[in-house]
Image 1 (cartoon, rainbow, N blue to C red):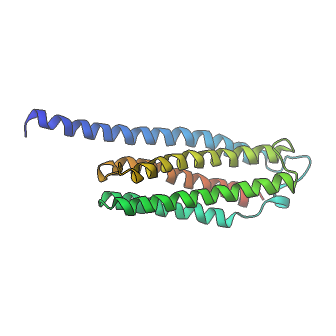
Image 2 (cartoon, rainbow, N blue to C red):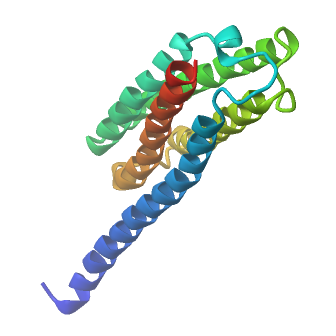
Image 3 (tube, helix red, strand yellow):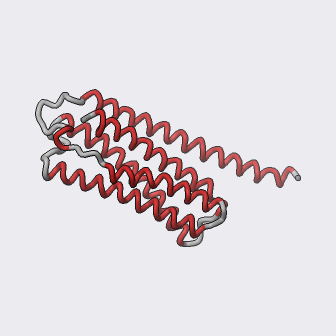
Length: 196
């Protein structure tokens, strides 16, 4: 192999490493931000002077949780299919991931609608409302970012522009999606288990 032909391979590995380091750095920064909101929520549990209180209005979000956790499985299948060269199957799994993520957001929106219009809990009601909407809303924002990336990938797949050569980039998006799911498990534990 000549020096000229070795350069593109080295450049490819370097680009690959940059992408991985970049995604790891993004996840680390976002984890720090989310940790601040988790700590604030834990600090203010039980310090609201007036209701409603978590035990009065929160129901365990089983369906939304199942949707989000299942979407982590489907995104793994999407990456695996693309690595094998099965672009259409990969696109189908990306579509399933998007639908499951949208299902989670839909359940969150329904919960917020009930909390605001039925239970009278807004971000201004008390400390619980402030910390609840801040923490759960921050997570929902991350879900929206992840869904946006997945939708872009699906659009590329529909145009025939998503190939096995892009599998690593799709995998990096899947890392972000797994991060969103892990964060949900933390939020779920803090808000719906410990906080009640």
